[in-house]
Image (tube, rainbow, N blue to C red; front, side, top):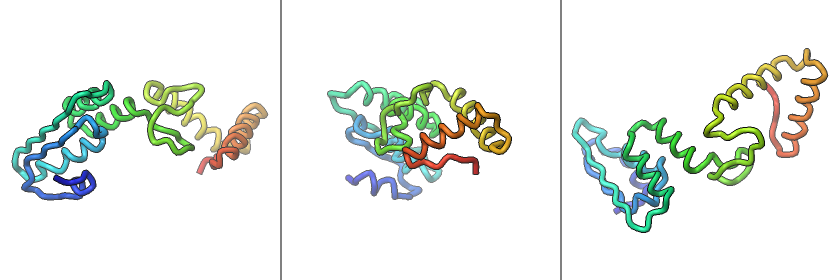
Length: 153
């Protein structure tokens, strides 16, 4: 028996079996990291995750995602979808931020387009027309109230 902090630090290529008790209590990232501690050598590995009732809906979803893939990127996306990204400029580490125009998990294309637009905006500060200059000034003022630096580079 060990804590997850100790388990994640183990690098034993001969470790081939792991039992996770109360798997429903762990986050997807923790479960994925624990899974990565076994099977590091050439031998087949086995992971058993035990869950105990009552299991919350989100706990059940985490376990379903966990058993459906070993791809770390898919695990990370599922974790983001389930937990939310937390606050960008705050202290909460999970939950949905209070965005007014987008949802971080479903509007990724919109967020990328906005980022590209802002990069162009910051690259051309000296040549902005008055509308874009007003937008830039608004963003700077809004960010300064939140102690965030706005700029391109």
